[in-house]
Length: 165
Image (tube, rainbow, N blue to C red; front, side, top):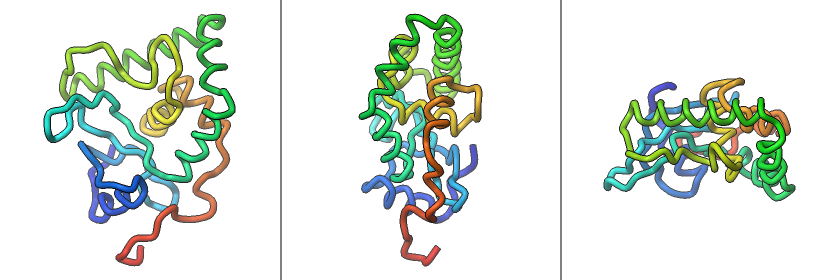
């Protein structure tokens, strides 16, 4: 994690089309230097629970992840949980680590983490964001999904900012 720097909020707002909520840190940056994944607070500023600790912001990244979701990758990975005990155990470990990390920031009093963990795969965006935040091995669904993605950053910055950066 790295602290939010000058210009990050503007970049994230341009990426997601609104002001970021609950922003705690930059969890991953694209090679261009812009945030691609952020860490959010377990509760939003108004006190609303927000169990999604990691959130992908780069529109190129999220678009490509959405394409994989449309191709049925979530369904395939959910089915794999039932037939691959090693994959299921790694996914459960990712869920437990996610909960422990979130609860260390602020307990929400729930065992709901994000993205369907630990019993199904519901949102590839969450899993890729988790992998980008912590690196390979943090989340098997994120690892596999990230490996399926092209180099989304290769064509340069996803947004242009007013300050010329």
